[in-house]
Image 1 (cartoon, rainbow, N blue to C red):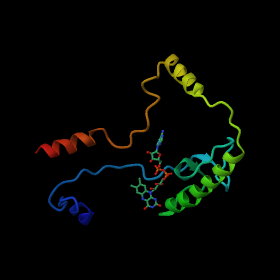
Image 2 (cartoon, rainbow, N blue to C red):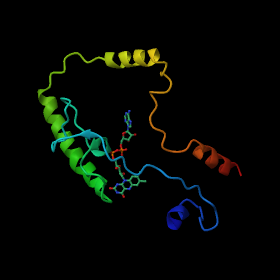
Image 3 (spheres, helix red, strand yellow):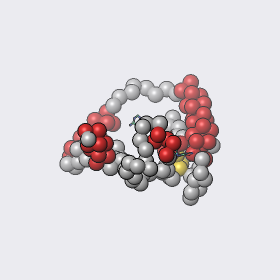
Length: 132
Ligand SMILES: Cc1cc2nc3c(=O)[nH]c(=O)nc-3n(C[C@H](O)[C@H](O)[C@H](O)COP(=O)(O)OP(=O)(O)OC[C@H]3O[C@@H](n4cnc5c(N)ncnc54)[C@H](O)[C@@H]3O)c2cc1C
C-alpha cells in the first residue's frame, strides 16, 4: 500500500487516508449450465452475475479464472445461438411498460438506480483535500 500510494505522490506514513469497506464479491446470481446458458433462451451469463460456481464461498483469486472460463463459454454459446436465432421484431416495449409500472407505483426516481457502492462523501472529501 505504501508503494502503491507513493506512485501518486501520497505518503501514507504521514498523511491520513480514507478507508472504508466495499463489496468484494457478490456470491449468488443467475443459475447457469456448463455452457453458460440459463433458463431464458438466448441469455448467457458469466462472472459475478452468475451463481453457484463457487459454492458458498469463493476461493481467493478464483473470480478471474471464473470470468475467463465462463466468459469464453458464454461468448462461444451466444455466437452459436445467434447463428440459429430468429428473434423477430426487436422493440423496447418491455422497457416502456416497466417505466409505466414504476410511475404507477410512484417509484420512478428510486428503482432505476444502480447500487451505490462508494459512500457519497468520497468525492467531497477528495475535492476538499485538493482545495487545501
Ligand atoms: C477490491 C476488489 C479486489 C478483488 N480482487 C480479486 C482478486 O485478487 N482475484 C480475483 O480473482 N478476484 C478479485 N476480485 C473480484 C473480481 O474482480 C470480480 O469478481 C470480477 O471482476 C467480476 O467480473 P465481472 O465481469 O463479472 O463483473 P464486472 O467486472 O463488475 O463487470 C461488469 C461490467 O458491467 C458494466 N455494467 C453494469 N451495469 C451495466 C449496464 N446497465 N449496462 C452496461 N454495462 C453495465 C459495469 O460497468 C462493468 O464494467 C476483486 C474485487 C474487488 C472489488
